Structures are given as C-alpha cells and as structure tokens.
Image 1 (cartoon, rainbow, N blue to C red):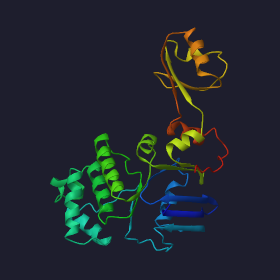
Image 2: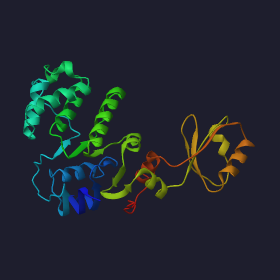
Image 3: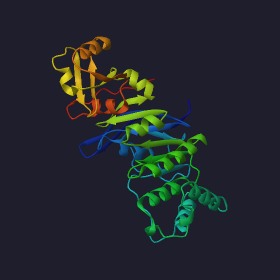
Image 4: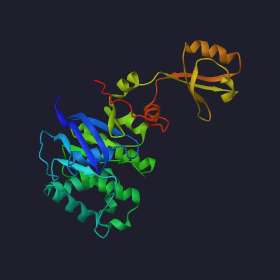
Length: 308
C-alpha cells in the first residue's frame, strides 16, 4: 500500500495540554479518508500537522513521500474550517490569484476556473465581487480556490458545515469527482451520515488518541453489538421489567436498545404486551459508535484501536 500520509508516533503539546498523543496513521493514496472526533479532540491539530502549519513535538509525518517541514506545498491543498476570502475582489480575480499562488498556469487556469464555476452553478457570478455572494456561494468559491492547482492531496476541514442540502450535494459531487481522478482526500466532519456514505476509511480521535481506524464495516464489526429498533403502541412502557434490555433510548417515533439474548425472545415478549409496528435488528451506526465512545459518561479514553 502506497501512503499519501504516514504519521508515526506524532505528539503535539500546547503548554501542559497534550493535544495529540503518540498518533500512528496511514492514509493510502487515492483514498477518501474521514476524520471524526468531538470538538477539542485533536482533529484539527492533526490536520494542521499534516499541512505543516504546526510541527509535531515528537514523531514524524510524511506527506506524499516527503518529510520536509515547509508549509508551502503545491501538491497539497487545504480548505480550513475558518473561511476567508478577499471580499472586494471579483470571483475571477480571486481565483486567478489563488491559482497562481499554487503554481497553476494560464490558459489551463482560466479553463479550470470556468469548468469548476460551471459545475458549482456560479458561472454568472464570475465578475461579481465576493461580498455580493451568499454564504453558500462563497463557500463553493473557496472550495474551487483549493482545487485549481489539481492537488494530489486535498485536505478539507468541515467542508459541508453551514451548507444547505442542495449545495452540500453539489460539493459532494465535486469531492467524488476528484477522488475518481485519483486525488487523495482527507476531510473532517461532524456529520456521521456523510462519513458513512462517502469514506473508504474512517479515523476517530478522542482526547488526543486514535480510537477508530478502518472501513465502516470493520468498525461496526469491531465496536458494539447489534442495535434493535422497536416501534409499538406502548412506547417506552413496553420494556418495563424486561430482563436483558440495556442502553434503552427513546428516539421519538421508536425506541433503540441493546439486548442480551435472542432477539426473537424479546419480540415474543413484546408482542404479549403491546402491538408492534416495527422490529428491526441493525448494526450500530457510526453515530451510535461515536456517541458510545465520546459520551460524557465515559471518563477514561478508550484504548487506541486499529482495524486492519
């Protein structure tokens, strides 16, 4: 496996706070790798170390086979969570400027600007100033600015944050197009459904330590038992006094739980009590696993786990 990113024993401290603890991570070339974790978990610090905006206090990070510590790298692009564009520039001038900074050359640059703006539905805005754009439009322009140099590695920090569903779909299509073209893409997200749907592999950091690393199927097989979802006329009252029921949660239109035993026994017991309109056995979602690991009730950080 050829690695686009190889992190070995990386440590990053801010004063007495150890934001990243002995992190090992390998991101294969051409993959779409999701980074997840609660706020303050070390996710953005890890991305910034990959970008060499920050340098590790210990360990080493190799990006596209290079261990150079310079932040400038024309083969890598980064879209930070904190958005920022020159508001008085037109879309065309701004994209030409950012493209030239990353080594893109005209006339290829102008062709790429026209193509990307067309795919984003922004062709009619090319000569408008940035401050005339809506927030969603500006976010799509900033995404275009990050891909004009045709990067080998694209790092996106919360790229879908604040986008309405239509614009989120447009950006999703653009990310998948780049992946099909061979670009390695790493993106962080708090939307577990997006991570489940898009990513080849998923990495979770919690309290500075790696706690998940693998495909969704591998993570589901490794962490947590099957979840049972039940909808009935009695709601939460249907489960009173039933042995084996654990982690019972009310989801509104249905209840979600774990069960220590044969689910068929549970179904028979519930049918004796009330009318059942839904009984589903499902593997735990990434959302369920995330909450289980990062719940405030969990005091110690789980042991780092890598799923081969």
